[in-house]
Length: 256
Image (tube, rainbow, N blue to C red):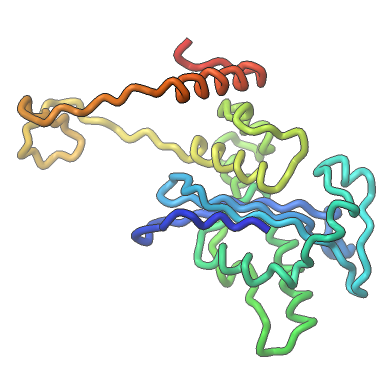
């Protein structure tokens, strides 16, 4: 389990958790379980660097390891052998709920992921005493479904792959497999672009006393000049290496 908690949130602003899961199948009612959870935090539409990521050993209701079909393994790349030493859902439930509590969850096809999460919560409640029960997802978070958002924007619901290509963010993440954290990171980039709204600008010149928030404000000629810090040789070399990676992924820098 990986909880990256290195950055202070500061004042309580709009906190979004971009979330994705990987599962053993498509329907929790058929006994399928969550095998991976990936979450990325955004505050005021800015990535904070905090994330929650965990692999989960899937057990059936008898406590036996749930064997996955090869068709499912081909999608997310997770095998039973890999998951054998990972924690079970009851072992991670407290940390998971603490991370998402009070946030707005942003999920692509939220019905699927929330359905699985609530199924896991229900199984936990069934196995535990009344004093240790947990709430359902809707009781601890608000939920935004970007599948519905895409329908509003495009007239029909679009896949995450389609949206990533449309907004030209598909090259930002290596998606050899559809990992939960990888897809959450990609959805974060898609969400930013999908919900970006261009406000109207009043291009009239205003003075410093103007009450118009959109008016152009002139900076004083006597202001302190900004210090220019040149990149170090190591930073220049790292930049070149990064551009090479972008080129290998089929992209090109926008300034070329």
